View 1 (cartoon, rainbow, N blue to C red):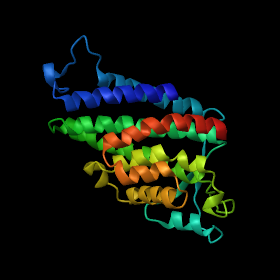
View 2 (view 1 turned 60 degrees about the vertical axis):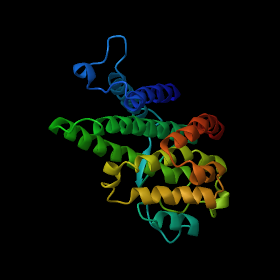
View 3 (view 1 turned 180 degrees about the vertical axis):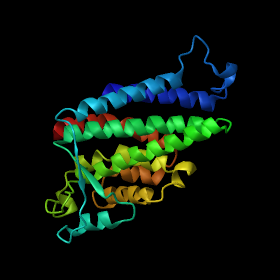
View 4 (view 1 turned 30 degrees about the horizontal axis):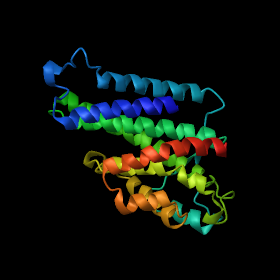
Length: 258
């Protein structure tokens, strides 16, 4: 999974560089990429297939997760009850066997989301034709599926159970490594919701819950990297710098926690 993450980051960088440099667009040269330059869009589609194949293999192995209905129960401690009552909270929780499996699935969900977010931005920069409009609509639909996958994994990372009977008594009982593993996914989600076309279709207030969990990590769990990001990392380029530092830490943390 780490290799797929790295390759996806490289392809996304190629696409973003082509868009921002002004050297050319995807429609230059009659819609073709020069022979000496690999087509980053083709690379992106190939990677997406590989990410889906990873999911298929994991689904048919012991790495599969369970999707459980998240019960709003009075038995929950105050901290988890409050977090789940914020607007946009998921109604489904994904339950994993261990942290290593959970982190690998989270990597897959976030990597695919970032890949399709880059492809969406590419489509948004193209002249609007019926085919481009259809591509935009389909990609936003897929992005929201991936967003929901990520959000459904957040409660398990915080040790919030489906029924509430196994929730930690207080936030201080949650190991900081679990909060740290959520930094990259949540910052990535927050950046995705800055795209107007995504934000305007967020009828379930998912973006509000992402910000609520980021605030929880900052103030209740004292995750310093979130605090630093919330103070000064407000641009996409700034958040990518945070991601570059956090991803290796997530890899090490997931092995320690498994």
